[in-house]
Length: 420
Image (cartoon, rainbow, N blue to C red):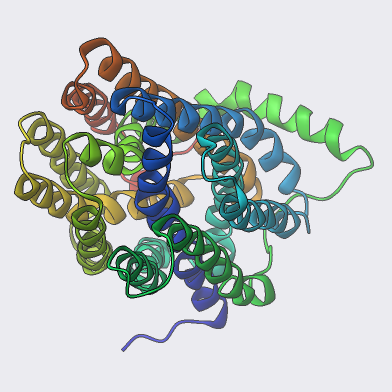
């Protein structure tokens, strides 16, 4: 069995820590809880799904605006971890706060959800950029994929605990209202995320950066402007970001909207929770498998595989009618969800200048997040205009097709010439 350094293990373990947020808040318990609250308040199913889509779009727009600026500042020596800590604390504190929102206030739930999303994804900007500090380039695909794989495994533990509490409350085994059981899941998520981030905070340190200057903010804007002007010179980086802009939009939108879509199809909450749990279990080995196959067939070819699977997912979703259909769809997603994200992260880390890693990961974030504004809005608007969530999901096919076409023009990192 391969041994990893303390820094690699600590970095990998953050995926174990924060993946609880991904499954419980982004995908499973929070959307179900929010949909129940909104329905009780008289909001229609299609509108409550649309409002969730708009909330995701708002959060991602905020991140798109601040990501490159923060990344440029954090490229200065000694600042990366400080920014990581700030957003990590924003995410964990606001996640706990979800438990204290009055049970009839769906709007405040969405407002605080936006704050949790900014904290979660903001911390990930700097977490992703730390990949260059913890492992050599030849290990990046493997370490990145292992992080996602461990994250899926780790997230199942708080998810099982949360599901157990909710189901026991539903069956009146525990003397709790189902709404209170859901709120406990938010608290469990925040505690899990906080505790298992400690190794990352203790053992991972910034190795690459630029020297500090007297006017950090002004210098950051100058460097950001210079990079923005020069980014077209980094042909491999520029083309990859364009491809990523489109295909990762579809991936993120499906993750964020899957539970709301399942609810609209009439699938009960218990079935949805079980399906999502099995999805996490199946996704773990497939994430690691993507990393191993990338070493054999290259990361780019495995990205092709992931995109093709998601195109099939969107087409299949259009015809989906039953709970069994949702099971099939979820298993398809499980085969590629972690792999496509892990290999995108490591692919990008291998092609950027190390001393500008945060700044370039800020651009990675802005491309991903601007795309993530477009996807949920596309689903939300299509759903409202047609009255069908299936049409909304099907509309995402075009994003994967465009992303695939552009990715075909991107050279493999091993063959790259950053400056064209």
